[in-house]
Length: 223
Image (cartoon, rainbow, N blue to C red; front, side, top):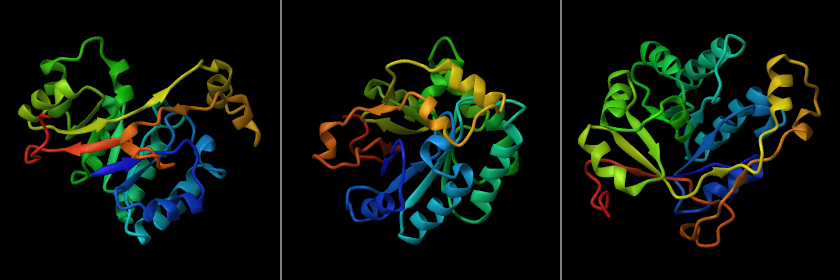
């Protein structure tokens, strides 16, 4: 399956995505703050998920990269609600604590270890991936084709990123202000936008393919 993720969404974007035959689903949820992706933050995320599901688009919810006492409970409640309402089919995490919680509260929900989870451990090897699998991870997001056969061998499914977010800089002031809840409705202006690299696999589409799904039964998984 092919999923896309945009830095910001409008309802017209979701409708247009539904008309692209090569796209199966969307990833909803900003890595840092949903006020960047949606005008009305988490509230609008739910509306967009309903719209996408109504159009037959698969939805994956991406949890924030940083989960603290400030936002952990709210994010976990959102995951539970999205699954209860059948609005998402998978969830992306970058936090082992979130993985354990979701596995306990949503035992049937597939959990993807996100690309940004790479910063959680100093080395990526079979032992670290086995640890993630044993703690509830069912899929791994990676940008390295060479890792696919090893991950499949561990019984993990793979989401291969064909391009991913790059950063020109990091605006630490924004994260500090957001964490302390000292932001206002214009906080988006204080943040450096995320830039996506358009891969040739998108065939010129304005919606770049972000991840391609591989499983043990995929004929092309080892190409």
